[in-house]
Each structure stands twice: as C-alpha cells, then as structure tokens.
Image 1 (cartoon, one colour):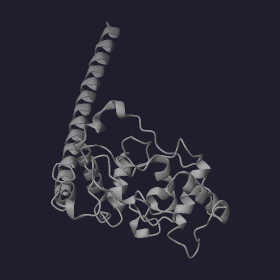
Image 2 (cartoon, helix red, strand yellow):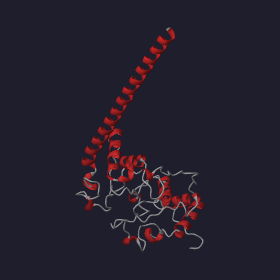
Image 3 (cartoon, helix red, strand yellow):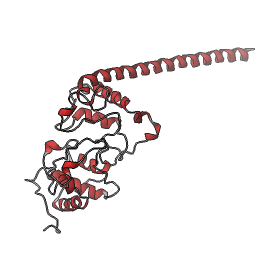
Image 4 (spheres, helix red, strand yellow):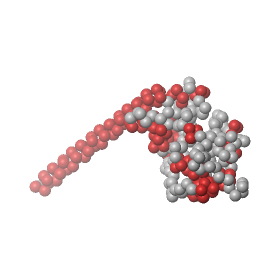
Length: 266
C-alpha cells in the first residue's frame, strides 16, 4: 500500500514536470518565432530605407538609382553572390552577407558599420527571403574556404605570381599590367546580360571586394558567382594562388613592388 502511494506521487510529479517542460518549450518556441518575426520586420524596414533605392523593393536590382551606377546592383532573387567564402557556385554564408553589409563595396555601396549589430543581422535575414535557394536543403552544407599557409610577399613570390598571371590569361581582361584595359575588358557581361566594369588592379579604390591580400586570395579560390571571374582552386596550387594574390595586390603599390617581368618576357 505504501509503495503504491509512493508510486502514485512519483507519477504525478513526473507528469507535472513533463507538462511544465512542455509549456516551457512552447513558450520558448513562441518567443523564438516572435523574435524571428521581429528581426525580419526590422530588416524589411531597414532594407526599404537603405537598400531598395539600388536593389529595388523586391530585390531585383532595379531600384531607381540602379542605372546611375557604374556596376549594376546585385539581383538578390538569383542567389548568386560575388563576394563569398564558399565554393564556386554556392550560396554565401550569413557572415559573408554580414561582412559585405558592414564594410560595403568600394566606389559602389556604402558600408553600414554605423548600424547596430542587430540591425545589420536583420538586413542579412531579410535579403535571404528574396531567393528560394536559401531555403533549399540541397544547397547545404556549404563548403567554406580554408586559407591554408600564406606565402609572404617577396621578389620570388611576385615573379612567380607574374608568371601565373600570364599563364591564367588574366591580362585578357585586366591588361598586361593590371590597368583594366585588356582586349576583352570592354565586352564583358555578367550572367544576366549586364555590362561589366573590369577592375583596374593598380587602383585601390577600384577593388570592389578586396581590402587585403587575403581577400584577393579568397576571390582566386572561390571565384565570383554571376560574372566571368572563375575559381582557380582546381587549376592552381594553393601556393600559386598566394603568389598570384601577392602579385596582383602589389600592382597598386608600384613604388614598393614594381611590376616584374618574367624571364620569358625579358
């Protein structure tokens, strides 16, 4: 009899804990959903104010200021992003989007570092709703770049980088010495038929997504989705991608590192 009473009390306590835990889970889920909705609402409001004049209210890159820009704003509905830390053809990570929103794009898009962290993350979450790719499970997991061992810039690295620059036919678009004046420079278009501005590698302000050698190496490793700039991950060794990055980065600082001719060019 005593054992039965103890068992009954234990069952009631267990049921009470289970019900209480269930209410706790429901409350947390509701709060999370509410917080998520609030974040999207904030992102929508900020996007309409700060982003839609160029990217358009529906993210198609057709805002009222779009045609006044040297480079057409990204059509966010395509899910094709140039600046990423992920493999060629893949979506960017949330941090990739956050980084672009924070630092901006040279000569094109201002950075929003002055906004709160929450505000910038709200914009990240909102712009993702424009493309179904972000909710497609087949797009994941993302293959993010491992930077490996960086090669320090040196005359030897620059000479090798120059050789790789010519070998990979970078000069066809960027010109023999990187001034953006190659024979194919003025006929380049993105995947959607928009004309492209080829980067003048000797001009720091023309580097749209790069603020260091690491950024240049990243672009050589991941490529730029939606434009002809390919990934060299499968065509160049890690060392040669670093050598090429060192050479390209040096082109804007010719007082320190004059463009070097290879033995074949001398």
